[in-house]
Length: 247
Ligand code: NAD
Ligand code: 4PL
Image: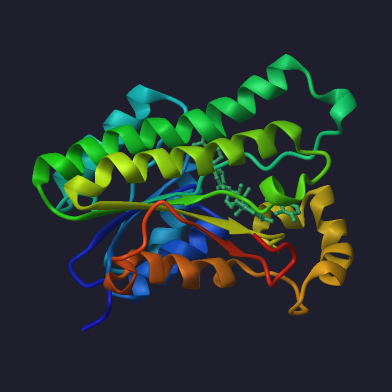
């Protein structure tokens, strides 16, 4: 039996990049996977690639009505989400001089408030079903590094770590664990077409283990946190960056 047989996992932002790799990995480990993304066509393509055991349900994580519709459809088409991977985010590259209120609010609204909106809906329904649950939040090692050109993003990712700690404390009594991962620079679809793609040489210099971070490096750790082997871990932030920073 695979480690996630019988589980139903929702992965947000799963049309490409790290989210897509997570969806593929959890499906390979036996989970039923709900591939969700604001990019509906991209989500459908990922489901087609995975084959049986995956369903595509689009949603904008920053829109509560869209997220409610996502969970209503998930409940209708699956056993109900017991494993939530909050992966969807905007990954901006904006120098401090260009950070205005509109940019700040957009990033906080998707990357931090979106994580709250999806977690609210998911954990209420997990508790109603009285089954153990997992919440896995994708933060970023930029919170430790203070990476430039991402001030709003770094603030949102720090918020996700704080949220992870508080939610873990309150939901442990309901059999739900809540953990975060902080990836370092990863060659995702989004990064490949952004100025972040120029940072690999610099980041490699800081890494203890050399090489280019790949989405699979993160997906493998998410699969562990989603598995029963991680049942005694909660409220933690696991840094996954080849030793670029020590947390
Ligand atoms: P990406 O840009 O390749 O993919 C992000 C996906 O999220 C896209 O498919 C996009 O459509 C979706 N998305 C964006 N806004 C959304 C919304 N409002 N609702 C639903 N879906 C939405 O990004 P990635 O590099 O794969 O990043 C995935 C996660 O990993 C993010 O949380 C990111 O912050 C984090 N992360 C990435 C890196 C990196 O270097 N790539 C490093 C650390 C952390
Ligand atoms: C080290 O989360 O962790 C660039 C872009 N460099 O999004 C990230 C590092 C980026 C990162 C990230």
